[in-house]
Length: 635
Image (tube, rainbow, N blue to C red; front, side, top):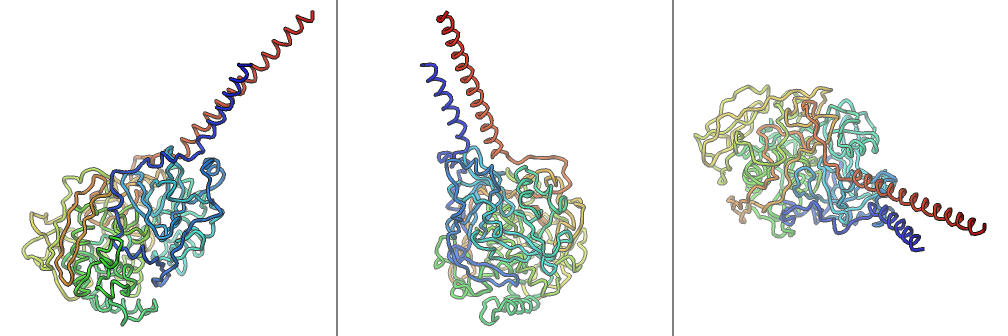
């Protein structure tokens, strides 16, 4: 009898162990957290947290309702999430608490990143780690997040509400879900559609480079670390030109031309130019572009996006068109400026040239608008599609101006695309570090810095370096860009531009990768999702604060964390370790998700079967022995 009880207990224990892999470990949810203080990683424009906005095809920006986006019909149980995950495709819902920041851990470099589910609700579900954290991909970044901070939703429940891409009128639009209970709210222009995408077909992508017509096929590639392998454009990634254009280049538009196309764009968006503080700012943008080597068109696109076409409250009351220094959760504390010109100067001199575009600054993750995988978007904004939206305004303005800045028009520079930013470690010694820009607006003469490629015609091998940068007037269409003024030290007269091989495949409009693509450090196409993202490790937030009415800025310095990547000197392109055909090595993405759970589950199930068979055999043998003993007694 005692043996029977022991066998029954062993059998029950084995069945309990079989269920354990499907349970969510609350204690392990802290796995993967970094030592960085996430409270210091904040949106530069807190208005995003106070007023949730969306964008339409024409660039109109409008406020939408900020609501809890939890999908009630698909709530998961803590008891057996493993069984649910095995049953169907899942979507990660980041809009669980309305407009709120969610912090995550970058799976590649271990740094801390942040996103806002009210601006990008859905992410691809890649699995669950052994510690119970959810693996996901959104805006090009692969990361892990606490299971309590997101919601796993059955794909079939929200199939009509997830984000997607579609070609309309020859342009590629990204329809972004901001609440999975509703259809996508934003329609973001990504420029001319590549030839491999068909009009009216719905495509899925969470990196913006590889497109799929089947959601399950996309998830399979992501989960197997083979991003793009089964995409319709396998081996030929798409890059949104203005989203990945180096911001140290110059626009081909003059100040007067920028003013003209800006007025037209506002009229098309249903905005009276007379009500906007952006009207007539072309001269300021071009002047400071020529002084600090920060692209005027892209800066204007950021201003449009941040200020709602120059009509936000802090824009109208404080001349703050970028929402600068409002990251302490109170817009009333945002910087005030004596004029719009002073605000533009502060943004281009200190926040861009002396901050996000400076390789020695901890916020630098590449000199392009980018995504959550690389570029300014990594730290500047909680909106995962902030860079894409600013680029959409640049597309809109450039189209109205005759496409002078887009290479398809034959006027923009055809620059080689640099290598993907290094994902961690020290900045290579051979890479020069840009000097801190002058903060008083005066450019010293007699100093030379590396040239920015020209915006018109073919880029020559060597360009003359002007003694003194232009400080006003129009920028000639085919002229060279002026240098970033240095504050001290020797700056090399020339910076080598890396030679990079062509990716191959079809070349299409709107794709800077169609020119040339990164070389050695870019991971291979159709093999793995090697997320060579820019570092997202948190650090002390160094911001430029400007006193009311003054053009002076008070710099707060912060040590650059090890996870922060050195930028590249020319056009940065590959965000999130996107694939190229030029690398001979394959690096698998970390596999700590469902595969580990499945192996353990199968092993324990097998053990349970063995215990059950053994118990049955013992019972049968014991019964046979009793029968045999009974027969002998009967005799």
